Length: 476
Image (cartoon, rainbow, N blue to C red; front, side, top):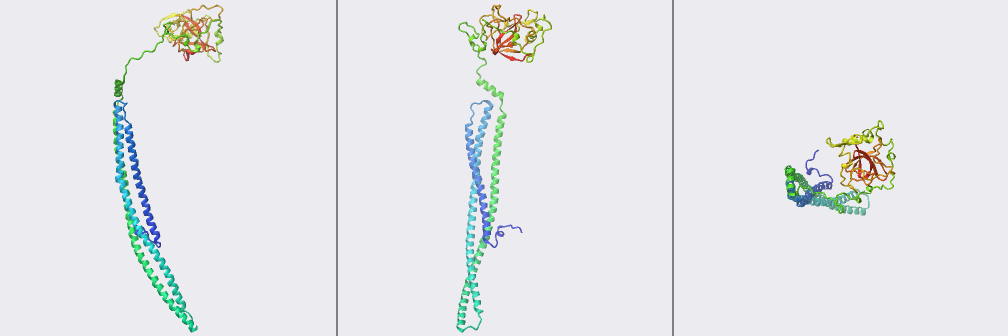
C-alpha cells in the first residue's frame, strides 16, 4: 500500500516512535534550509568582497604611459572593471534582498510552527504515558483483590463458627477494596482514553501541518534556487556584454597609427652620433699604442732569435690533410699547396674589375687583396710608416729564418680570419689587417701562428699573434 500523506504514516502501537520519526524529519528539513541560507549569505559576502577588489583593481589599473588605440583599449578594460565591480555589488544586494531575507523569515516561521506542535504533542504523550502507567497499577490492584475474593469464597464449609466468622469479615472487606480498585482502574482508563483521543486529534493536526510545512519548504527552495540561477545568469549576460566591448576596442587597435603617433611624440632625431676617436697626445695619431695590445701581441725580440723551420711545425699526415705536392720541382707557385691557395682562394675574394699585378712566377694577383701593403692597419701598433709586408730591417746572414723561403709542398693547417690589425715589429713577423683570411702553416707554444701571404707580388711567411685572429672554414 502506497502512503500519500503524513496523517496515515506516523502511527503504530508505540506512539513515541511515530512522534520521533515525524519531528526528526522536520529537523532534517530545517538543517537543509539552514544550509541553503548559509549558501546565500556566503555568496553575498563573496560578491561584496569581489566587488571591492574589482573596484580597487580598477583604480590601480590607470594607464597613463600608453598612447593611441592601445591606450583606448586599456582604458576600456579599466572601465569594464569598474562596471563589473558595480555589477557584483548589485548582485550581492539582490541576493540579500531576494534570497537571504525571505529564507530567514521562512526558516523562522517553520521553526515556530514545528516547535508549537512538537510541544503540544509532547505534553499529550507525557500525560498519556502517566495515565497508562497509573491504570496499569490500578488494574493490578483490582485483579489482586478479585483473586483474593475468589479464594475466600471457595473456602470449604465445616470449619468452626468463629473461624467462619473471620472468613466472612475478611471476604466483606476484600470485596469492598476490590470495588474501590475497580472504580479507580476504570477512572484511569477513561482518563487515559480521553487524553489519547486528544493526542490523536492533535497529532493528526501536527502531521497535517508538518506535511504542509514540508510542501511549502519544497516549493520555497525550488523558487529561491531558481531565482538564484536567474540572478547569476543575468550577471553572465552582463559580463559577456562587457567582454564584447573589450573585444570591439581591441579590434580597433592599429599598430601603424600607434607607431606613427609614438614617433611623432617621442622622436629625437635621425642623425646618429659619431664614434669616439682616439688621438695620441704626442704623435697626433689615431693608431692604438703598443702598450694597449694584449699580452700575446707584444713584439718578439730578434736578437739571438732561434726560430724553428717550417718543417718542424708540420703536423703528421694522419692528423692534417696535406695538399698534393707539385708535379715537378720547377713548378711555379700556382701549382704548389700554398700557391694554389694564393691564386685560387684569394682570386675568389676580389671583384672582377679589381686591378691586378703579376708575381715573380707570372701569376696574376689582385693588388687589393694579395698584397698586404694595400691594407690600412687602423688598430695595429707600428713603429714606422711602412705597414706592408715586413719592416725594412736588414736580415743578418747568421739567422736561419728566410720569410720568402716558402716550400712548395707546405701543408695548410687551417685558415684564420684577422679580427684585430697588427703591424710587424721585426722581419720574421707579418703585418695583418682586420678582415684578411690567412692560411696558417704552423703554431707555436707561445700563442704565435705562422701564416703565408702575398707581399709585393711574392709569397711570404711570417708570424702573427694567434689571439688577433679566429679559425674559419674556407673552401679552396
